[in-house]
Every structure is written in C-alpha cells, then in structure tokens.
Image (cartoon, helix red, strand yellow):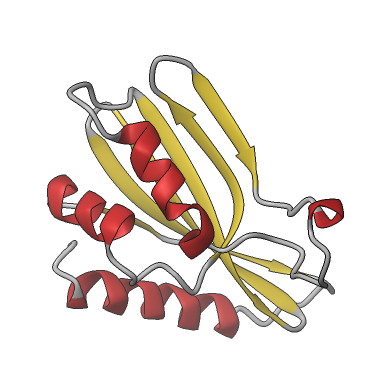
Length: 138
C-alpha cells in the first residue's frame, strides 16, 4: 500500500470527472460531502436489469452523476472514491480521498487467500505511480 499526493487538483479532477482514463475501474463505494452527505454503494441492483450484468457499476456508468453532484461554485468538503480492478485471486484498489483541499491516492490489494508474497501489491503500487506520473498528477 502506497499513498500519493496529487500536486494539481484541478487537472486531476478534470481528468477524473470528464475524461475516460478511469473508466476501466469498477466502483466499490463513493462518499461525497457537498450540501449533504452522499453514500453510493457500487454494488449493482440486479433486479433493475432485464439482462445479466456485472456485480458492480463502472466509473464510466456513474461519472456523469458524480460530475453533476460536485459541479458548482462551492467545492465538496470531502470525498472518497473507492475504485477497483478485479483479478483472480485478488482485487486491486485505488482510493481517492479529498480532504482539506488535498487529494491523495492510496493503493490497496485484497486477497481471497492468505499469502506472504507481496509482489502483486508492489507491482500495483508501481503501476499506479506510473499512471499518475504519465498524467502529470505527481
């Protein structure tokens, strides 16, 4: 697990809310404090759909709704986006936290079985660091 401090909040938020670079992630949870506190669980309501769908929504599916909630003259006081990628036998997480005008990205990995091997976590940390550097966020 590593944390990365974003140096350009405006650029990061523009890419997060309007670009496609986060579209491949699934959403585990969103907490957003604006005029009220919104808590969005990423688990899909499968009864809503007539066809078979994935268990969780993607960032692409909810991005426009989040943009609507955060746009305006007043910044959110806090948010946390917990995004993830599925892999077997583990899930790779990217937590994006905004508090006190600071955006931090925190990596994480959850395993379905116990392991002492931390190479997957280290690879994920490196992948996220490279992604953040390539997009001029660090």
